[in-house]
Image 1 (spheres, rainbow, N blue to C red):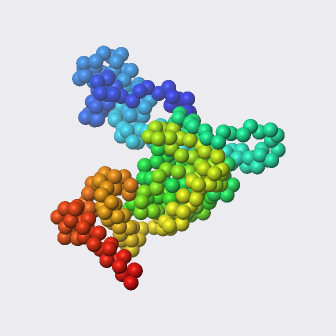
Image 2 (image 1 turned 90 degrees about the vertical axis):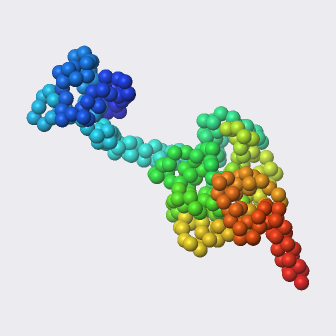
Image 3 (image 1 turned 180 degrees about the vertical axis):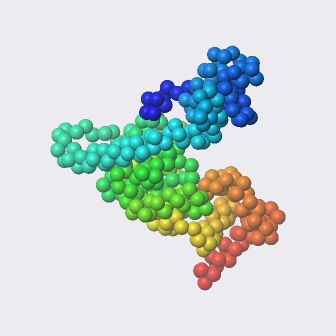
Length: 343
């Protein structure tokens, strides 16, 4: 069976169709044939024959061994493996070929830049609102990286690509050399199994990951020459090439990187306790500033329920019944600490 064969397969049986009734009947019977379907299901011989033919093509029915007219039902998982297994190797090979071609094409970028005459300069700010075009811009910008790709990510990434083990973690941002990529994540990422796996995989490929107590905003800076920022609350983004603006964004992001903690993806109790303490410390500071629960949760990139549970635990530890009492206790502690430092 080829890819073209799959494209012309009948639809998977849906509830209420003759094929669904025949498949259900086969699951409940030792075997089925056209005549039994006509007799027990009340469908015509033509409908029964067509349904059985479709189910056989989908590998959901197969002939009883040594028989030419009776069929038994097949597990859908087994059927799908029989249909698709023949393509797995070909698809893997094709993926490797495409990746090799991608890298070979990207290797021509230095030659292109060095020899192209009168190349049109891109605008200082390029706004892209179409999601598919924006994804292409991200891939192009990171593919051209020569020194570093610095990225800060909240927990939810609007430009995330489906996982692809061959291309590694964060494939849209890693460019052609994953070792150039530095990723800044919220401290809560240390408790996320998926993020731990990605951090470990990127670390193994020469990249770096760090975590910060306050959730970073989505920001990408490439070679300290190009920055990409989101467009408000919409699906678009802006590509910034104005040197002064890019330099300011790079300094902000690099400064946050310098204060963040290295994260290689491994989980241990000491690291977990430290991360939890940093999150609690940030909650305390934001409570002192009078921020609401939902604002605190958003800034720390944790769920509102988790945030409220942590606040309740904090109130209990402080012996406070209300947020006002907690603010008073925390403020008194802060003033005491300041006097000790001054002394």
